Amino acid sequence: MKLWKKKNLLILKKKMKQSRRKFLKFLLVGSGILAIGKILGFDRIAEVNAWAEPGQSPPSGNVDTPLNVGSTNQTKQGNLTVQGTLKATNRLNIPVGTDLFD
Image 1: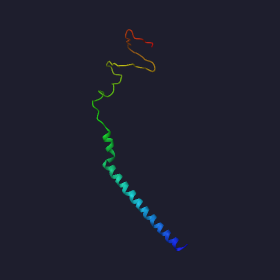
Image 2: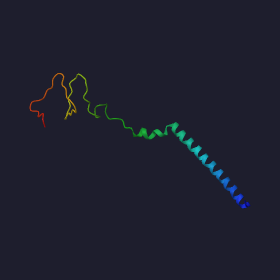
Image 3: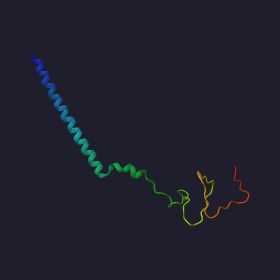
Image 4: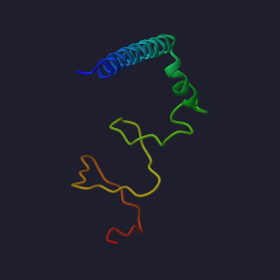
């Protein structure tokens, strides 16, 4: 091998070694910065700012209360659709004038 080729090859190897060291240093420093930010909770700032406290306690101003199996009387405004069998174990009140078959 000619002398100039050998010299160029050694220079190239040296530059590759230097660039590898720079990359590893960059990777180590970057990982350290990310780890410190995670420990200090900087990744939670956006989550905290995105949360808005509700204006009223539930269910006021939130959603309607659901129909449940409690023993108190319940009223639902709007239509009620039952997909399946509707069973009334005690009695079923149907107001006069209600059209049962639309």
